[in-house]
Length: 285
Ligand SMILES: NC(=O)c1ccc[n+]([C@@H]2O[C@H](COP(=O)([O-])OP(=O)(O)OC[C@H]3O[C@@H](n4cnc5c(N)ncnc54)[C@H](OP(=O)(O)O)[C@@H]3O)[C@@H](O)[C@H]2O)c1
Image (cartoon, rainbow, N blue to C red):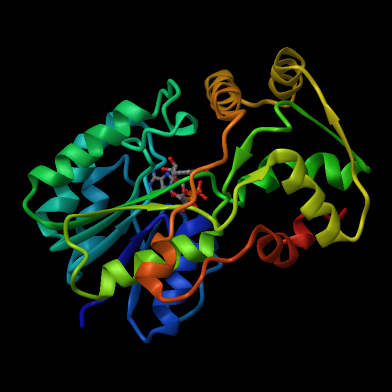
């Protein structure tokens, strides 16, 4: 079997896809902008490439049939990069988002949505075998949202504490990706993936406190206070506004929970406590 090309292999989900493919005995090539510093296992064939430099993609794609694609590059790079990728890849698994799911958490204005739709249209029109993964909120977002405050002390100030989500462990997204990359029967599938349980943000923080062995003081703040504080530490305004709108819309109903991870992998998804326990070091000073 030819190697599978992982684009985004140094990121949250891609790194898990790489390790689970290796565990299955599959040869892996990872496209990387900085090959010398990927920290990927030595068995991985690391190839230099950059989605914003389409001429760098051909060498990475040579001799591969299947591609796992994570896209966080700018929208202007989509068309030229996808043209190169879809010219060579027989099968593509794209890490998308639940853009077609009616739950209000997923239907707030989001500047990235247009780009994701464009990527999906190009893939669908290519005639290749494709699978779209549509995970909800990543459990790993907790590191970006809360680790700074939890490392600094026991107080966490946050808005919309009652807003529920069903955080999904990156290992479970990767497990579905590996099935779609390696097994037949996933062509044309769009998998909406969630964690196993609807949990308010407040409950998620309590679980992290339990995982790190501390009793956190969780303080609700207004959306305006949150916006001001997050902008002060460098968060981009569109991302802050998108999250605030999503949490506001999510209040008052449980998060969507799907059974797709179990149906595809035969293994129940990790709980948020599993995730927090295995990532507790990220919350410790
Ligand atoms: N967070 C959520 O709750 C959530 C929910 C649903 C969907 N999603 C989607 O998930 C995706 C993010 O996944 P993630 O968290 O695993 O990503 P991530 O950790 O941010 O990693 C991004 C990966 O893309 C690579 N990359 C960035 N720009 C590149 C370029 N120009 N050329 C080649 N590689 C490039 C990065 O490589 P370097 O090492 O070179 O930086 C890194 O490996 C996004 O598309 C997001 O919309 C996220």
